Amino acid sequence: MPVASLPDRHGCGSFGTQAYRFIDLMKQAGLSIWQILPLNPLGYGNSPYQPYSSYAMDDIYLSLDRLYDMGLLKKKAPSYRRRAERIDYDAVRRFRAPYLKEAYRNFKPDMNYAAFSYQPWVRNYAIFMTFKKKNGMQCWLDWPDAEKNQPQDSGIDLKEYEDDILYEVFLQYMLYLQWKDLKQYANDAGIIVMGDIPFYVGIDSADVWADRSSFLLDSDGRPTFIAGVPPDYFAKYGQRWGNPIYDWEYLQKNDFRFWLERIAYMDRLFDVTRVDHFRAFDTYWKIPASCPTAVEGEWIEAPGYALFDTLFEKMPDIEIVAEDLGDLRYEVGVLRDHYNFRGMRVIQFSFDANGMPADKEHLLVYTGTHDNDSIFSWYHSMKPAQQKKMRRCMHRMGYRSGSFVNDVIRYSLDSNADMVIIPMMDWLHKGHDARLNTPGTVGAPNWMWRMCGLGEFAAVCGKIRTDLEASDRLSSEE
Image (cartoon, rainbow, N blue to C red):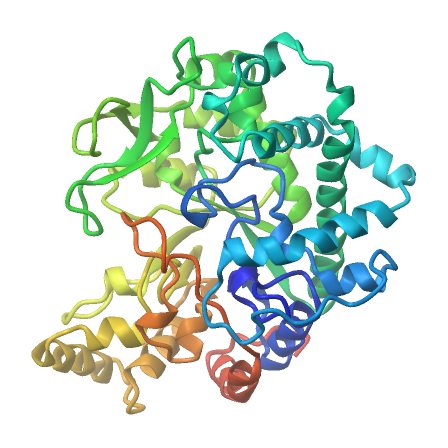
């Protein structure tokens, strides 16, 4: 369940009251893990996988009501787009902006704030966003040279921008406080939180702007090669993501500092970290930047073993889930199993009329991910003959509730996997309108679905608890 898709009084899910209520309902239902999407600042197409920073969080998640409770707003912000079923990101940001500015003016820094602000990524991101807003949110590659090259040249006296920079630092500090409180509330309720770290960073990000040596760029800072995947089930011409490719030779010489610092910070924010596009630690698809599609490219081997050896030497207890989906070569599984990472299995990809493959215990099973349609919509998009075969398959395995969605959920919960994730849209039997993202497409309606309230979820909590109990998945505390 993405944070953005939670109900809220101000048009987009936040770290506010409804998020706490959501956790209460999870506990009531007997659920014990909440997976979210990346919280990083949303970039191109409002995608959480094209963020402006690997570290920062998007200020759209700040709860205005909690800022009021902290005494930083004189009056509660009125409701805005409270019942909207789609997130209008631009409109919500415009509405929230004056309240965030008011909160900043009323904030009194303390020693904790000072310690937070001294983190290098905080300052870099604050300067980056200050210049980005000054330039009408254009990509940093199109800024004046002095601003574009500030990390290398320090040619600009930042005093005239200090208030804008400190405003960005304030937003990140408030986000950190609100998130840590929310996560602690979840942990106290017996719920762990799984975060999500994109493998690549966006070209238009503070990461690339401040650390160009870690990427394959030309002298002007533009990518010479970009990331993506070749043609597959999702996209006829592949997926041309546009993210810059890492300079792995440089990273290895520096003990993978970029990656280790990034993962270490995610470990501070989440209990478990899902690494998106894990296969790229083994081999990655390298597309010349001049190519208009992802059809042209080549698979290049990455130093995955060297990276993870270095990581576990410094962080031996970190818990990682490997997103190992797609048409993978054998070596990806060897790399995953060498470090005992949980892999993933998605029911929609492994289900056919002949049944299911055998389950492994050390695995994370999904009915679908953020890139899949709901089970309800997936099933109803099939031809009647295929639907009949699917039902027969479920019947042979002993699932015959009369609801295909229920049967798939029960099958998933009954698997040997030690973790099972059921998207909210499947718990609620939602249709295509609740789909979060269609790979290979950009813009509306991707990432826009939201719940107007938690009533539907509350209504099925009893059923969820019954299913968890029947599958022996209630925690021992229950």
